Amino acid sequence: MEGLGAQAQAMSPAAMPPGQKRKFTILLILKNLGKVAFMFGFVYVFTLLFDESNAIIGITIASAILMFMNVDMGIKPVQASFLIFYLFLHVGVFSYLCLWNPFLGILVNLVAIYFMLTLSGQQLQAKSYFPFLTGYVFAVGAPVSGVAFGYRMLGLAVGGAITAIVYFIFHHKEKPSRGILDVFKQIHFTSTRHRFIVRMTAGLVIAMFIGDIFDIQRPAWISMTVLSLTVPFTHEARKRIVQRVIGTVIGAFVFVILFEYLIPDQLHVWCLLATMFISLFITNYQWQMVFITINSLNGGMIFYSADTAIEIRMAWVFLGIAIVIVLNLIAKLDLLDRIDIAFRKTRRRYRLKKILKQNKF
Image 1 (cartoon, rainbow, N blue to C red):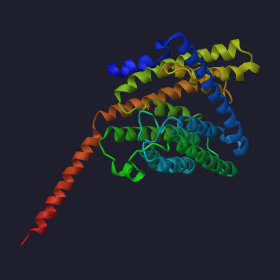
Image 2 (image 1 turned 45 degrees about the vertical axis):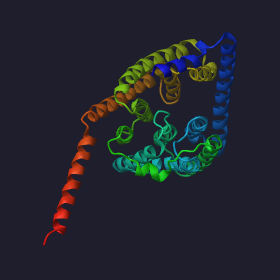
Image 3 (image 1 turned 180 degrees about the vertical axis):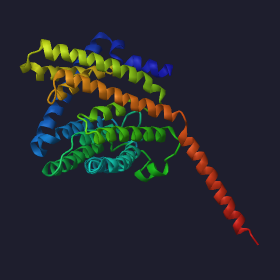
Image 4 (image 1 turned 90 degrees about the horizontal axis):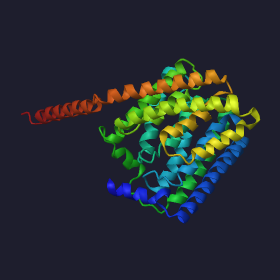
């Protein structure tokens, strides 16, 4: 650990010579400007082609393209590329089916989310599953039907194909030995990865059921809180929960000061662009939450006053936190271990009875 810390410190801008640090800063600014320009350009073209109601899907795909330039899926490149294309279609189909009925939605979401996480969750630390789950959460939170759904599926197909091609270009030289079939063969019922998948699936299913059964506004705020705070090791969630609460409160306060008192309406768009750009330089989760809260509340202002948007945001964030805390407490009961032990005992008894029956004279 000390070696890793030394390497990280050596690579940080603070440890660089002044000239190199200046060059690094300039390159970082240009890189982040390019990201913002790409995001807005991609989403603009996407909404022109696939309807404005699918703008959130365009944001998801643009983010996935940028992410998969650096993050690999942990499986063979060709198979991973086809998997990316499929998973975006998976997002469109199952996010539509789950809204037919709240109780049917429990089963649909359970299967859809578990399957997505199992296939895309080979690189948990790199969060290779994140674009697909965020896409699913946003698609469920912003449902469409009729022609708009057709445009959504077409947009997901085209965007998924572009993302898959980009992924293959950047990762085709990598040689992981694992294939898609190996992912299923290597599922360990009590492994850290599988425990994480079960908690994440359960948390999102609960959050989406609450949003559906009570027909609440902005249900994605609950699901995104669950998605953000559910981590492979439950003890790590405590710090993130505190940081999310603090970041949300600060973000709401800053939002009110900026958008209600200081900045005139005609400059709101430029202020949001500035906050988005600044957020690209931030790695601390608490301060990321400040900027995420500002942008989320701005979106909520389309439907509500500032006071109402803040109240709903705070309520749904705390509800998402409650879901995560309850599931983490349940995880401490080691139910998966107990089920696994019971299953193994039952299987041993069955085999023993079978052997005794075969050896009867």
